[in-house]
Structure formats: structure tokens, C-alpha cells
Length: 405
Image 1 (cartoon, one colour):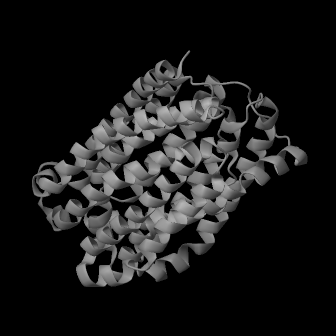
Image 2 (spheres, helix red, strand yellow):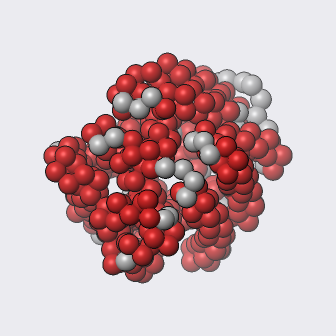
């Protein structure tokens, strides 16, 4: 099967996953935004920031290793599961013991209880069967479609139902917990092999040694992606973080989803053709054109019609996010191009370049986020994020030219 046929099949099924999940996400956002306040969203945003950071801090690079491993991966499943369980427990402890400090840092008393509750999410995720990576590695897109959409449907239904009943932020986390429990169960039903509680030190060293650049990159990438959220929450308060987070969600989700879908499909394909640089170059240029074709009009729509979009989908209490949404529309387009292009470096085994790109973006964000946020509020934070991402573009294309031309 050729690249184009594999890619088309993958884009179709993974595109369907994103269409279904984002439609459900849009419904959930519209309903919840009219029930919860920006401050409540801000408190939830703080909890998810800590969750993501703890997961990244303990990232092992196992999934990327399993995808890139050209041989059979069954021998790695037991060790991967063991590591995943231990990692989940470590993340649980990190979040619980840091909850008080995080609440003080963000000056948000509600965040502490949310952090304790959300700490059970990674603890449960640790028991997910690592064999599910085969959906992506072996291009089983049909199975992944049913698997992923069922998980997201579970989270959406329970989150909306509980928020409508309780009017509390905790309901969003309970939706995550219920969905995670379902995923643990489903992962043992839909794919083989099923892991056993076994650990092989030699296999562990190989995986961890390979994933060191991935781990470093994800840490840099976290601050690159969420440094603006941290600054807004700390400098401007929980309500401003809620406004910014909502604008960020509705603008970046449709833009980055296109890039994510294509990246997820092309990554294993790029690996298969990585030995033929001319073929890899042609494949990249075709998919770059596809990403640009889909993301530019959407970014332009957010730039031109932010008030109409917010009024239609979120309601009048979110109108203060209009200026930030205009900037984030441009940011989303640039971000989509940047994030998609980096999959080429991973397929070539150039994890260090991936790390360097994240570091460049982080540098642009760090030197501007505080002065921009203090001067222009959440719009300044959006401008800082746009500047950081824009700096990565020339770096990405320099290395693409170096490796592919």
C-alpha cells in the first residue's frame, strides 16, 4: 500500500475521530460555559495545568519508542505497563503534595480540592494496556475510531450531566475519572497482548535511554505551550485565566486538530519511508499544503469575527475574551504549521532538533509574557504566545532544508 493510500485512509478515520469528538466538545463547551463562570473555569484550568505538568515531568517516551521500533513490540508490553503504573502513582503523589503550594501560588483557594480529586486520573491511567499503541503503529484506524470516540462520548455525557445537576467544577473532573476507568477496562478487551506485572531492566534501559530527548522536549514544550496560562493565572487571576483558557480552546482546537490528525497519520508513514529522503520530502510538501489549506481560512474566521463567535457559542459573560480571540486565531494557524512540521524530525530520529525547537519557542514566550500580560492583559498573553511560536518557524524550515534537500 502506497503512502498516499495509507495517508488517505488514516486521515479519513482519524478525521472522523476528531469530527465526532470536537462536535461533542463543542456541545459540552456551549452547555458548560452557560452554567459555570470564568472563575470556575480558571480553577479547573489550574488543576489541569498541574496534571499536565506532572505527566510531562515524568514522561518516559515509551509511546514514541514503541511506534518507532521497527521490530515486534510485544516483548516491551509488560515492562511498559509496569513503568506506567509506577509513573501514575508518582504523579498522584506529586499532585497531592503540591496542591497547597499551587493554591498559594495562584492565589486560588478552590484549586486545592480540585487538584486532590484530579490526582486520581493519572493513577488510574497508569493501568491502561500499553498495547493500544498498536492502533497507531499498525495503522488500525478503524479500531482506533471506535475506541477513541467511545471514550470521549463517555466523558462528555457524564461531564455535562454532572455539571447540569451540581453546577460545580468538580463535575468536569468526575467526567474524566469515569472515562479513564472505562478506558482501562476497554484497553484490555479490544487489543492484545494483555500485559502482565513483569519488569525487564534491560528493556527498560533501552526505552528510557531512547526517550531522554523526548522527555526533555516535552518539558520545554509544556512551558512553551502553557507558560502563558501560568502567567495569566498568577498575574491576572482566576477569572482572567478562565476567559483566556476558553478563548484558547475555541480558537486552537479546530486549527491544531487538523495538524494533529495529519501528524498522527503521517508519523508512522514517515517512519516507513524515512530511508528515502526524496520521497519523504515530497510527502511532507504535499501534507504541508493540506494543513495550510484547511487551517488558514479557519484562523482568518476567528480574526475577523470573534464577537459573533463568542456571542453565538459562549454567551455575553465571555465577551471580554474578544481581543484575545483575534490574536489567538492567528496564533492557531502558525502553531498548526509548526507542530505538524516537527513530526518529520521524529521520524528521522532527530529528537534533539525537536527539543531545540521547543526551547526556541519557550525563549520567545518567556521574555515577553510578563510585560505583555501586565500591559495588555489576556490579549498581551496571546501576543506573547504568537511571538514564541513564530520564532520556531524559521528554525523548523532551516532544519527541514538541511535534512531533506
